Length: 304
Ligand code: BG6
Image (cartoon, rainbow, N blue to C red; front, side):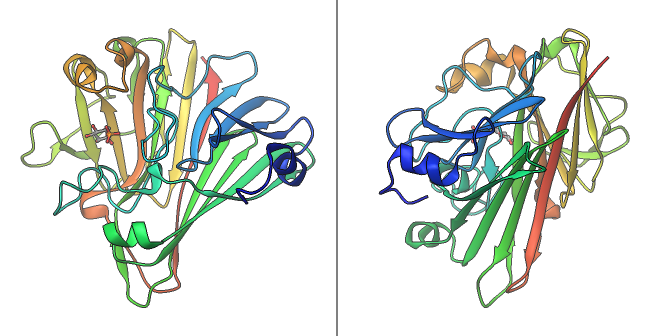
């Protein structure tokens, strides 16, 4: 998006009547609204960050903190942060930002379109530059495509623009809204090995469906499985499919960690859970020059 354009000019160029329009949350912080016949989604140019996805007449599917920052350089708390080129703390330099830099940069709005005249799609790009190369040496381009159809589809194309292969970890770090964390379960990762980030140590194995009664921060490895949040309070199941991802991260900060985060309300942990389509730990990916890796997730809700 050319920053010299006014909001009206941006809407003339990228808007589609009743389906795609651009507003500013605060000056210089554009938010793109996508509206299909059955749902609404919003995406911030900052981070290429999906903020919301709400089927008509339903509870929001994604969770967003009431205390989130909306400021260049600060990650938005909730929605779908894009994690690249490292997941979690930087492996060798903890002064570098947690979860990489893609979620704290403004992305360029590249194009918008309507599929079959009613399903909106928006495309953003992020390229390497001086700042990214001061944190991570490789040349890359990222393209994010968000499509609102029967489901919300988020596709991240990671291209190696360098002359040497690079290895990265990454995630679509989706935060889901739930009626109460104590009353849900997540199905799909039964019998899957995981790294318990809270205890460390050898891999553990998930026995039954995942339930919550304390902080949880698990990286499930070597899994391409679809997950399902069963939420009797909201009378729905949220189905989270993914591709190009062999790790799934399940996170809820519970009481003490919530209290330590300035952009997370003390009681907000009761209304959220993260299911992240990732490539982390030994599922890191190596991309050759000129090659592209596609990481994607598709999210929908069904009544139960
Ligand atoms: C999860 C990690 O993906 O993100 C957790 O597994 C981390 O360890 C959480 O606490 C939130 O990270 P951040 O950097 O957004 O506070």
